[in-house]
Length: 509
Image (tube, rainbow, N blue to C red; front, side, top):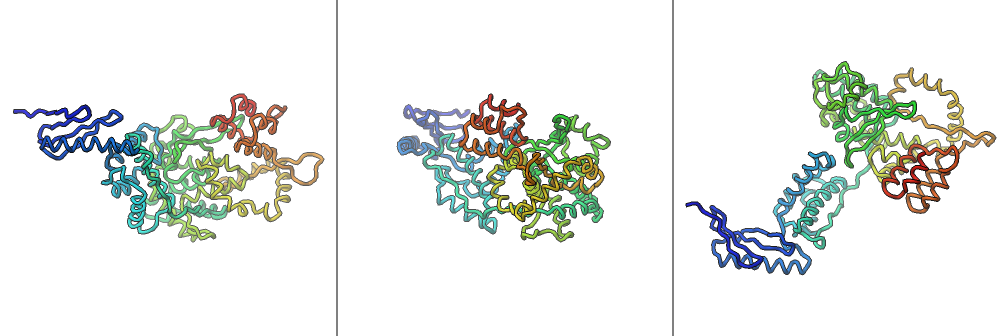
């Protein structure tokens, strides 16, 4: 005879059920929010099962009065919900790449330690115990950035638990971060950059292994693109596809634009012109795209990854890093003068340093690199004396006079750059110096946008009203023109709701 499900109504809020194949009673208890909580009473006795169910019901009522969750779940189960949610967002394209790091943190550290905890029982002591366990697993104190990743992953689980009513905000623990502070990575000088890209031209010939040769061919182009875009090594660069490239036309100029997917989602950036030839060489390596021009591939919205070997395989991050370290060892420049080790990620630091030397504002640079201005200020402000040595040595006045003089011969300077292959590949900072006003002293004129930048700084912190900003920058005066980085700040202010559409039009038109 086929077994059927049995149900007993104990009260309006309590039900007892048996499932086919089991004589033990399952309890269903209705919570204050109208949801039903199901659990096993672990007994075949109706009387005992009723007692267990009623005890849970009255306990849950007491917990509600004390601002505690009426029911809870094991951390492992809640973490699975949080992981599934992130994986679904990644599949749909709405999730951030950094979700992969959070999922790894859950699988490798958080679930192994907290898995059997009731999520409502994770408190400050449990977090301290977890920190000690993590140190044992790593064999050292975790870095500040690693703990940040773990804390964010933990918060994703706690968010899930709070949304489902398994914890309350009142008992939610606050993650701590006592990790080793991250220092800025080592960088390269322009001279070292030249040494490296010259060595990369023949580096692949130093190996007899075909796979190593193929990786080093990609490495040459990879390094030049990193140094001339500021994109992140690994996540952003190796996920770049040809469809993510586009030409940006502005008046009579054309620029190469890219869309990269980083920690904060997708963002646009502009590549220096020196990145174009390495990308063309990378195109020639791809067996599926040989014979096609860069224009044709960009136009076709090709789905192929950019950094593939001559065998059509995407270059592996560990292989690129290992071969780059081998190159630096052969050149005896693994460590810089500051004692810091250089890696492929150092090209991002190199890019930022050169742009700041050119006078690019941290606000404009933050949009290009996907960092906040606070991060850029924190990492690079201490290097400012080395970034602008002419300013601190007192030589900048003479340098600017010389630059102003040569600026009157643009055709001659252009011809030199076009004829010098080394200059084409090296990201030399060509700083624009404003022309001096007629009839003034020999002091160089201040940049036209300096007062404008100050006005925007005051507006951003609320010390200048919208009307005062328009007057200060002279938005309604004849011949007014806003610098490119300030045009970007205008759009950002409008996007954030701090600037009206009318004011935006006046600033941009």
